Image 1 (cartoon, rainbow, N blue to C red):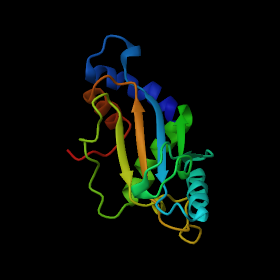
Image 2 (image 1 turned 180 degrees about the vertical axis):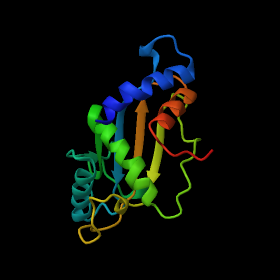
Image 3 (image 1 turned 45 degrees about the vertical axis):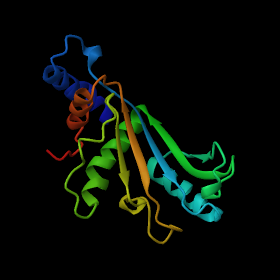
Image 4 (image 1 turned 90 degrees about the vertical axis):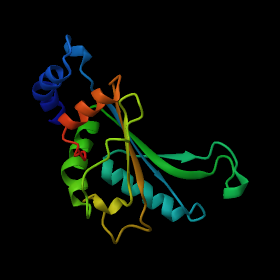
Amino acid sequence: MERERFLTELVPAIRKELGLDNVMQVPRLKKIVVNMGVKEKDNPKILEGAAANLARMTGQRPIITKARQSISDFKLTKGEPIGCKVTLRRDRAYEFLYKLVNVVLPGIRDFRGLSAGSFDGRGNYTLGLAEQLSFPEVSYDETAATQGMDITIVTSARTDQEGYALLKALGVPFKD
């Protein structure tokens, strides 16, 4: 649904705004990666709860991420589970972005817009949310602990200006 709207309505507008010659040069949404790190690694219930909440939020089963190397200062051993992540592509990515922009972000208290400085130089955007309770699928009673998450929006844009134009057209509320 959202992907069709993007292809029919937004692609010509972005093409005109950026002054591109070919339709295939218009930046597109490649994927969205949602990552949740778990602070209390000793309690397996918190990791299971975070994975269940992430599955409810995204509609896709997350994978459990493990530590790549041992770090003695953090009491972390190699191969220990430390979080979970989901990679959304195609229609699911567009639907998740629509829900994020129209439901989750307006529901955050004292929200004034996202910073335009969080682009990585290649048109990809990363934002962090302090808690998962902003999503309507997650109830307070079912959460073991409040978890934050990082959301990375990966685009096919070559520059930050192209990525900004794409996300602005998709409805992402930036501070101007």
